[in-house]
Amino acid sequence: MATTHPDADLPNGTNTSASTSPPPSTAHSPHRLGMPFDRRLLLATFTSFSCGSMLGYLNTSRLASLRFRAENAHRLPISQPGWYLYHKSKNYYKLKYGITAGLRSGVYLAAWTSIFFLVEESIDVFRGTWRAGRTFGEMEGISELDIEKVDTGVEKSRDFLSSVVAGMVTGGLWSAWNKFPVLTAARTIRMGLFAGLGYGVFQDGLTWARGKTGGVVNDAESWIYRGAKNRRQSTDTSGELEQQE
Image (tube, rainbow, N blue to C red; front, side, top):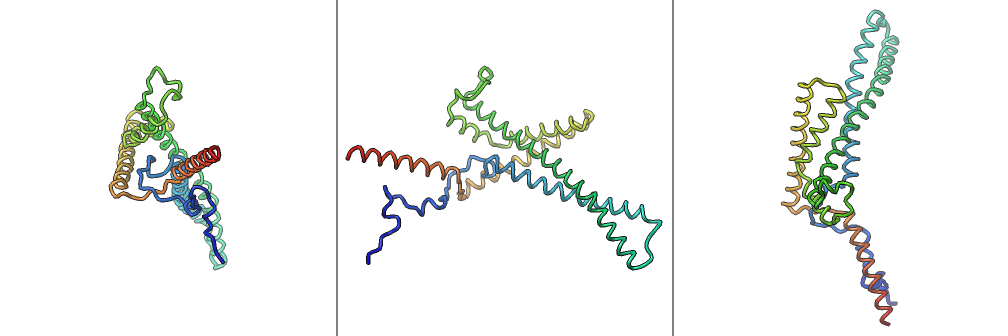
């Protein structure tokens, strides 16, 4: 009994195995850290929220434990069941204040981290559109610019300069939010400059290392785009063959 290959009936030699998973691409990724902005923002926000919550909980729970101990120093238990209830009450006291302060610290840190990444991406896009031909006389939109030039300009603008400016802007906003004096605000902005510089150089170094070693990048978005383009070309070719017949 003859058997047929499952891909034999597909037109234009289309192979289903090639469409089940994106093929690895050695092309350079145009995104920072090899991730799109929405994924990078989500990862940074989640990481900062987790770190802020953990640090806020540990610090506040330690202080709450000391405060509980000081408030009850005059009535310490004298029996084993009493010590059990004492430590149980102290743990509840720590959780009560630690969880609330931890969540507050996590949200606070995640919000400021999001501001940094939003400013960084906005500067990348602005510099990219400026490279593509945008001027002060045409600031109302980018519909008149070539999309390919905009994409190329944005990709070339993803360097440490945007990270430095984002760090300075974030430091300035932090100083304005806390109403720091001028000297403290200047020191905070300088700290933001060095933090943005370090982070930007790290990103540039990682991008250079990936391009130098020829690292494999699974770009799912480009794979989907290429798959849709191939299917559209296959449909057009099939239509032309039917018209010729």
